[in-house]
Image (cartoon, rainbow, N blue to C red; front, top):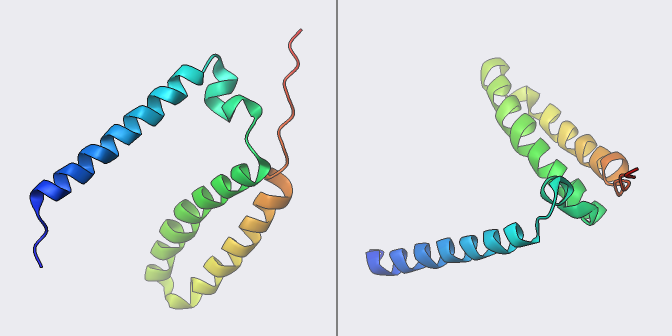
Length: 105
């Protein structure tokens, strides 16, 4: 079954439009560096933990361990599972706590 290029172009343009609108809304709500870097310190702890977990899994576990397993054998895959489990647990318990507000003098 062939994919119609016009339908694909419409979906891509809608995606780009939505991305630009969300970016503009975020730009308008950004007043200082705290707003930009840590969402005004109003992010829910679960969002912070999931963000850390996704970054951790994609970089170290999949990319790093994939290369090592290809080099040393698939027996090292258990390290990936253990690393993901412990890493996500640490993300929720340690890094998932709400960051404290900075006190300005």
